[in-house]
Image 1: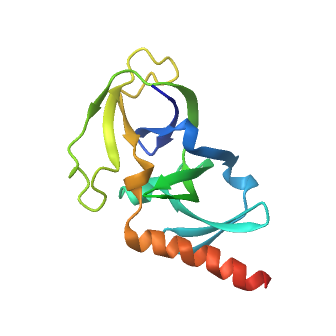
Image 2: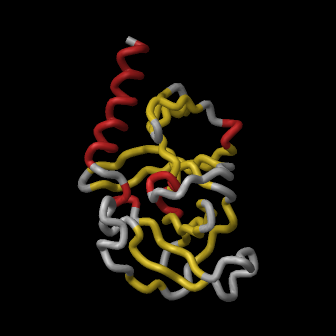
Length: 160
């Protein structure tokens, strides 16, 4: 089992595969410009990459946004870099046993919440009884992927 970053997204604890994380930034340290209701352009290493609030992707506003988790997600045969805005990043650790969740749990994002786990015994999470594993490959819809591609294209045109 690989290591996962455990982060808060509103009341939800999420696990993100640490092998797909490129960088983590405090929200104040990474320039971000809101382009649409839940699409941001993040300025990272002289490039613009797309970003989304993870809570809003699951229809749960993340009022306590503290970090941008920049990932290199394997989506199909392509690796895509994008940011996910989350609350507090809690710890990086191996997960306890993960139970599969029904693929249709979030109809707009089938399979994006791949499993659930108990947080019992995770001392950093005394008030959260459970967490959910995010499958980055299934997180974004085709429309969101295309919007993300547009952020990168617009940046390339601006610097040409």
